[in-house]
Image 1: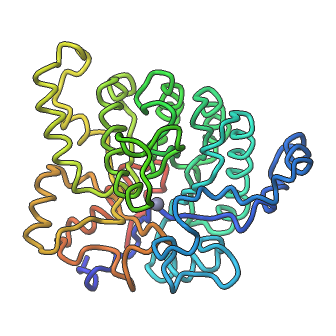
Image 2: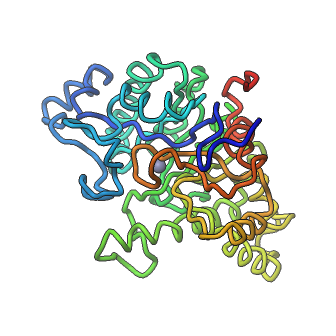
Length: 364
Ligand code: ZN
């Protein structure tokens, strides 16, 4: 295949991080179970937005100016998504990741009720209306048993291709209380997508609560590093050898340095984790993938090449736009300096290898 114009994804690319947003909470009402619909209306909860206030609604990073909608939250219109991304970039499959307050709620029952309604809504209002779309299963992350139930409920529908968690939760992600989620995901061939974000049970920085969004945003890579350490050290990939984890919106360049420390320290204290029989880096290369945007690429082609060499695998990166968030302009969703073979791997081969539920039709 010819190399596409500078920075454009390869035609037929698989976009592994698209954010579908609720226009408002009322649209969920038909998708709740009757008890919860009545409960929510009695309490007037349908009037709240439950948007996790990761950033102020009008912060530039939240929506590219040309992807903003006149009278609705960016990302809430299927027609707009088709025009902005799916048709324009010839996307073959797009994976919808809904980030919602349901993932943060303290009540495990209410959290499950909202997650179920969101999953029902995304299936009826998005997946049924465009065959290119698939979605991550939104689960109540603080109850692994209920999360596993929701995975079991939706797994028969092959358009659900992943389980979605946030990087920072109540417990480090590798802890055994979370294992029912990984057991269910592995059983159904679903990767676990770990998206940037926190349920704010703890400060995003290890030093305490920051004052500014700027600090929160920059602290996310520390959260990802801690989540990955926990998954590796607790032996999640030993217990669930078929499990894949996708770090979504994590950036990339922090990973080689973090893995260097993990390998070095493992050599010194490996007696306490006898189940880790290989270098942590080898485990991560086998089981962990990262979405591309926002790509913290260094400015020159030579520097980019060094980062990719340090990753040590050309199978780890997955194409994403992170629509509608603003990380690139025009159609320049890929670093132009990538070699053509690697571009194709990132856009098509690596996503298909990761998300085995996607139909493997021949790509033109
Ligand atoms: Zn994202």
